[in-house]
Length: 201
Image 1 (spheres, rainbow, N blue to C red):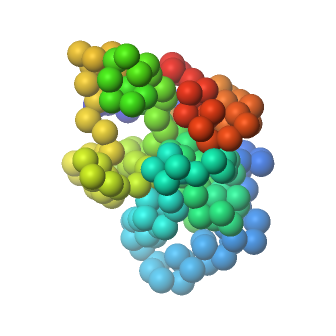
Image 2 (spheres, rainbow, N blue to C red):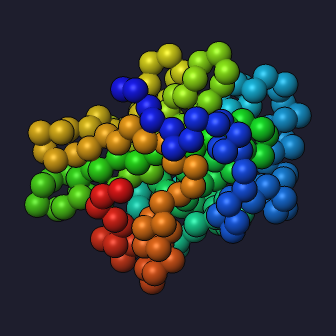
């Protein structure tokens, strides 16, 4: 798939977007420094940030939690979040290390069947000068989901099924979608959020 960034200037994918993406909060700063102290390679730093967001942050829908987290600091503090929250965390860590990162979305079946309806799923795109843009999905692995940090061959959480109405959008956004943030802020708990997530970008 040819990815379509919202801006051709990669510097537009490095900035903060308060209060969702902020670099100077305590836990975010601590995590960034831990990653930076482990390796000087930007690609290894990106991989470490991805694997931390994927593996160390529980997916709230998987665990049945009622908690909604939105910004990176809260995700790190509570160690949980849905796909959107995990993508906010990953983008924050990457941008905080000077690695351009954006937001991508897919339209997926809400619960595996057409009758269950559709909802957006959030993931990320990362940019390096020698590779261009590529996508990763920090959703979190489980049975049937095996997302990996792969630059050459994309390995995301979901295989999109267009014949069932699912959509793999090629767009890379500078900021999380307003409709996504609204659904997160307006839901009383994660159970309601499961049904309030927007269906289309």
